[in-house]
Image (cartoon, rainbow over all chains, first blue to last red):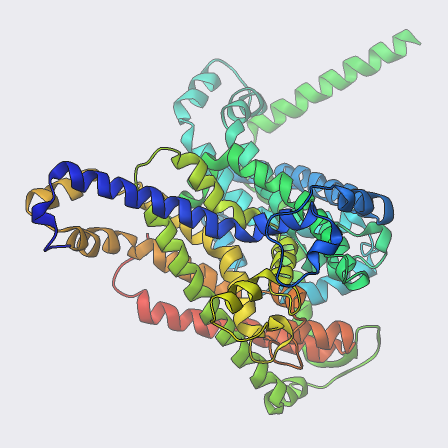
Length: 284
Length: 315
C-alpha cells in the first residue's frame, strides 16, 4: 500500500476505494443472505432435486407445489392465525400499559420515578427459564395454560421494559412548552394526552407496536411451555413440530419458514430509521 | 323512555366531566403513580412473584404435578453441585456464550464499519444486512439445519468442494461439531444487534475529528486506531454486556438445534433446567438449576464490570 500509493494519482486512489467499497458491500450482503436465498430456492424446486448429491444449485423448474401441500395437508393456516391473534393482543396490551407509564415517567415528578425508568435494564438480566418454570405453575393454577391470551400476557411482560424505554424517548422529544400553552388555554390532562402527545409521538407508538410484534411473532420458549393443545400452536411451535413429524419434506417446511419470515422482514424496511434511533438511544 | 335515556346520557356526561375535573385536580405525584401502576402491577405479577416462587420451589422436593412436597433446604443445590452434568452444562454454556459473543461482535463491528461508508444504495444494503435479526429463531435454525444436513446439505457440499473436509458431516448430530454449528447459527442470527449499535454510534462521531486528523497527516489506520475505536468503546461495552447476558440465558436456538444433544454435548444450564423440570418432572431440581443460572450470570456480569467498566461511565 505505502509503496504503491506514491505512483497512484488522487483520482486513481479514489476509484480504487470506490471499487473496494462496492465489492465489500455486495459480497457481504450476498454471503449474509445465503441461508435465505438457499432456503427459498429449496421451496420452489421439484422435491427430487432436494435430495441429490451433489446438490443442484439452480432449480430445473419452478413449482409452488410445496406451498400447496403446506396449506392443504398441514395446519399451517391455523398456526398463522394463532400467531397473529397473540401478536395483536400483545401489541394492544403493551401499548395500554406502557403509554401511560412512559408518559408519567417523562412528564410527572413522583416517588420512585427514577427506579421505574431504570427497571428495564435490570429485568433483561433475568433468565427466561427462571421465570418460565414458576409461570407455568402459576398460569396452570389460574387457567391460563393452553390459552392464547395467557401467551400474549407473557409476551407483554417481555415487551414492557423495552417499550417503556422506547416510548419515553419519543415523549421526551416533545417540548413541554406545547403542553404548557395547551394547559394555559384550559385543556385538561386527558385532552393534552389525546390531542397533543399521542398524535405527535405516533412514530414512537408505531415503532413500539412493531417491536412488540417482532417479539411475539418470534417467541418460542413460552409457547412451548404454555401451549399443549396443537390446535392452539403458534407458528414457531407449529413449524418446529412439522420437522418432528415429517423430517423428509424439507421443501414444505422451508415454505412455511419463508412465509413466517415475510412479515417481520417487510417491517424492517418500513421502520428502519426508528429502529436505529431506538437502539441508539436505549443504550445511552 | 327517551326521558330515561336522556337522563342516563346527561348523567354519564356529568360523571365524565366530574371524573376529568377530579383527575385534573389530583396532585402530580398521585397522577404519576396512578399511571405507572398497571406497569408495576404487571411486572410484580410476572417477574417478581415468579422469581420468589422459583426460589421457594428450589428449596423443596416437589414434582411438576405439585402433590406431596417436602421442604429439603439446600439439598437440591448440594445434589446439583455434586453432579457431573451440572459442570458439563456450565462449561458448555461458557463455551457457547464466549463463541457466540465473539462471533456476533466481530461480524457486527465489521458490518457496522462497512455500512458507515458512503455509497449508493446505502439504505437497501443496510436493510438487507440487518435482515437476519428479523428472521424468527425457529426459521433461522431450520434454514441452517437444512444447509448443514449430513446427507444433502449444501453447506457440506461447499466444504467438500473446497477440500476443507473430506466427506459430509452431520453437524448437529455430532458430539464434536454440534457446538460450533450452534455458535455459527447464533452468530448469524444475532450479529445485526451489534451492527445496529455500532452504526448508530458511528453516525454520531463528528466528521471534523477525521478532517483535522487528516490535516495533521494521520493515516487511515491511525485514524481508525485513535478516533474510531475509542469512540466505539462505550457502545461495545454495552453490546457485549447485553449479548453476554442474553446468550448465557438463551434457550431456543439450542433446543431447536440439538435439544442439548447428542448426549449432553450441547446442554447448557437453561436447557438442563428445562429438561429436569418438564421432561424429568422434577420441579425442585429444575428450579434450583434456574436459580443457579441467575447466580452464575450475576457473577459473570460483576466480573465484567470489574474488568472493563472501571475507568469511564459507559455511554
